[in-house]
Image (cartoon, rainbow, N blue to C red; front, side, top):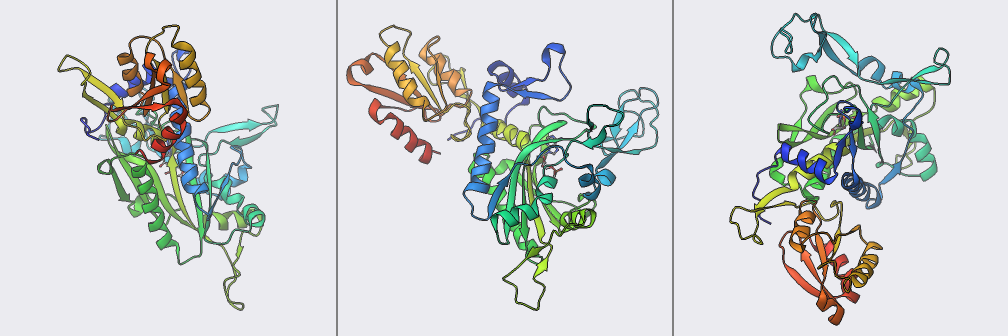
Length: 448
Ligand code: GAP
């Protein structure tokens, strides 16, 4: 399909977001809480579809993966053992005049970027949020909000092996919230203090980790392309040794060309046996795997190595959304400079899949239109819209990315047929109501 914009303008996305209900500022009526966002009626569907597409592709469609949903609150010893208490920090400097804080790696001069004042010496600032568990704050234990979902997977490794009898290589995937007290959040939903991750810990035999790292890098890159992101807006970047996280031996970032420049969508790290070993030592529990494919007499028990593809749900949503945004000449308009705003979202990600549109609010049309709507919504996320002209309603569906509109007109009352309109080509075809669900299912399966 032709695209007219090389990539979307952030201001346009922000205006569409608020107007159509994708994302709202959190606590907006109180002035808004900085860098926190609420997904509105359309945003929540888009986000659910992104998570669903990930889950289907990495868990349901593979026989070497299982899922998990671990608690956000974990024993504080987890974060000591994982190294987060000691290492999960950013160097931060504070201005002696205005008290603003900055990450040292964001600074371009020795003076405060806000007021020009003198900056104090850098100190480490731990990014984990603390809270209290128990009713009385004095005696309650201090615990952390998880900064990554990964540790919930590591500590459950023996439980999953024992309950599923999975053999190496296999992985555990999880989607869930994570919290980081970021010093410089920003760029809309790109960097926030509360966000969602989609993480895989893939356990392999030591020695096969480099090959599996390459396999997962390719797999995850292809997933973004298969779900609609233009290849030219994605790139891979290998980490320099000085930017590797404290647990990583090697890491690749999948980066997207955001309107403000290339930035990380997902990291695929080689974590060796760092985490399982740390938890084994700290908990005293055996975290090893018994490999019955290894000959007796050789090391049958070992700690597996781990490849970790870890993506942000919010960043993926933003990238799919930005990449699908387009403004095209509007062929339905008499004015030559009229534009049609359209989200060319992958059909599986679109917040609304089908719109049921009676040609008008004429009372003769309404019962049949409602019947068609009731039939469709059992199978698809369907919206009913009968307000304003049909042309305007097509445009409203285009700008939220609805792949198919079904129009019920006066002929429908005679011939029991409806018109399906395709979002991308704007072509229309007439089909019997009895075939509607099957035709749409077929289009959804093969249409992209
Ligand atoms: N378990 C490994 C880990 O957490 P990470 O690179 O720190 O690795 C993984 O985070 C992904 O989580 C990132 O690629 C990004 O998509 C997302 N992410 C991290 N911090 C984020 C933030 N403050 N706001 C939104 N997404 C974030």
